Amino acid sequence: MSHQYDHLSVIDPEFAEAIKNLPKEEHTEDVAELRRRFDAMINMVNERDKDLFPPASELRIEDHKVPVKGGEITVRTMVPTPGGKSAGGPSPVLVNYHLGGFTVGTLENDKLWLQQICVEQQISVVDVDYRLAPEHPWPTPHEDAFTALKWVAEHPALLRADLSKGFIVTGTSAGGHLTGSMALRARDDPFFEGRRLTGQLLQVPATVHPLHVPEKFKSELRSMDTIDMPGFAEKRLVTMVYGMPEFLKPDPHDPNCWPLLHPNHAGLPPAVFQLCGIDVLRDEGLLYEKLLREAGVKTKLHVYPGVPHGFHMVFTQITQGKKYLQDRKDGIRWLLNGAK
Image (cartoon, rainbow, N blue to C red):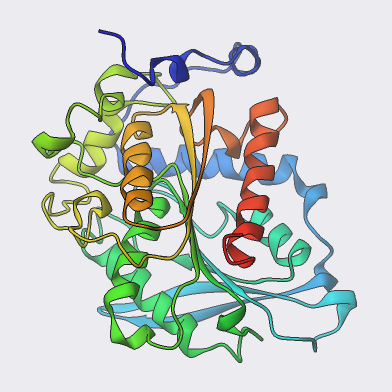
């Protein structure tokens, strides 16, 4: 039986041409090898795009240590310094959680677009280097992310920020999962009274455990079983991260972990969604946007047909890649403008 979203997974011709000569890599469950491959890809992209970084004089970049349970993590702050001046009016704040299936990824992942957005939109940025599985299984990444969010709320002066101008969370994939979770936790925590989040940008988020989908959602969540693009959109990689005991080991039924399972989505900050047509996570992103909208949350939805999960990190010059990057910038502006 045809499904309403099947047309979204027809491969985009430009993307098909772009990947035609890409080397094929064998599937691996070796964490060290996964990290080696991922870091090599990120380094390649950052080197390729080195001329796109803003001038160093336009922002101040610093690393700070944040105490967390069992140790400390690093957060990288980026504060706009227009015209090379260290003083200026207070800025809104954007907090970012990188992608990587809770297993790979570093502060190198998103540094280009975060530096660009810092300068272009005069917004202070905090990039969070949460600890990774399997060395640090659930709930460590989530607790690190929440501790970092509280740290941001407590240090506006360090960031030359005014949270009332905007306090936004964003992330991609695993980071999108954290974004949704942090928005829910911050809504319910009295700590954030008077310094509430004002927006969330969820990029290809994971919102429900792939092996424990509630019966009531199964008819709407088909992409996990119908989409398979080796190297880009693979169920086995997602189930490896979330389902195998050697990896993240999340509680599949905890609503504080899985945004789709939370019983109450009302009162969340406005949300921008960026979802890909050839993505095993596509349908859970579409359903989560629907649930938020039905709960009275202002949402803006962008879907990119014919391209896979995370394509925008490498394939920035195809039409869909350019649209993704522009929609992300426009989405942040929309959130900063009170979702108007």
